[in-house]
Image (tube, rainbow, N blue to C red):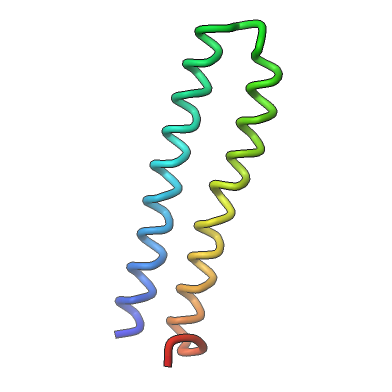
Length: 74
């Protein structure tokens, strides 16, 4: 049962990151298309948000591994 729980946690974390990143970069491209002179500012903000979005799946994978090995969720 813990294998199923861990795989669901890791899979949903990856799916959430993929959806978040696709929305982020779609809005980034849209922002550049509207105001090309704001490219540098938008790039910096996009990279900060990209790091924050990617931090959550890493945490999800860590918890999935903890559940898999029975450390959490007894």
